[in-house]
Length: 310
Image (cartoon, rainbow, N blue to C red; front, side, top):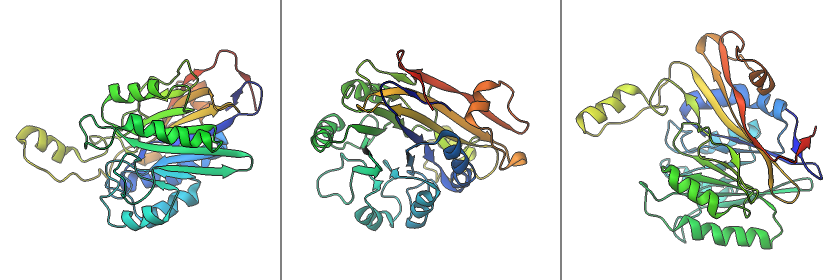
């Protein structure tokens, strides 16, 4: 896909939605390398919140994600569900737990990664509506963005792992002009509201998930339905059959840190056509994808004054 830019070569960031269990990991392994070839991102951010059977992440999974091309892995409310996470977060600066956990919590909530002349800051925060009552994500972002700006980091992507759309939107408006992009995670359903805010921040309420499609947010239906019908506790397990998806967003950033464009996309694969790949340009060009595989057209927003790039 061509890049959109104004006054210089843009930075491109590929953000992959919550990877859910083995189906999500398999989908990522099959399609991320080809998506990287098609989009040519400068940086890749993956939410690995549900990567280990739907509950957190392990050392091996994190290593696999980095080997596939990830530069930063973000987590969320399930960050601590796997016992390996404590040592992993303490030792690996590219794996982030939400920054607004209390002081003294293991790990980091901010990473700065470099490639050539580019530097990208990634910040993870957890929402508080219908979730754990952590520190204020708004004021946490104030401090983080001020520190990143003081250190000369112009390009900053914020992962808002939150339940409520209103809270995500509020954070987007709150940091407009201070963060390059605000990408929501956690709800596992990709939203159709990719846009550029007036101050130059790219915004998407939720990027969606990478995992099984025929469950309830990636989990087996029976246990979820039993929970709703009886009100009794159930153990939720990742669905292992049926079609899978890889949901992502692509953000082009100007040299000054403002966003030039944001697009959302999905790659959908059926077991009958495992490994079939529909590149983003083909998804956008045709409403009838290749047999056995479907993908939604690239959707999003771009700055009106931006011109076509490479």
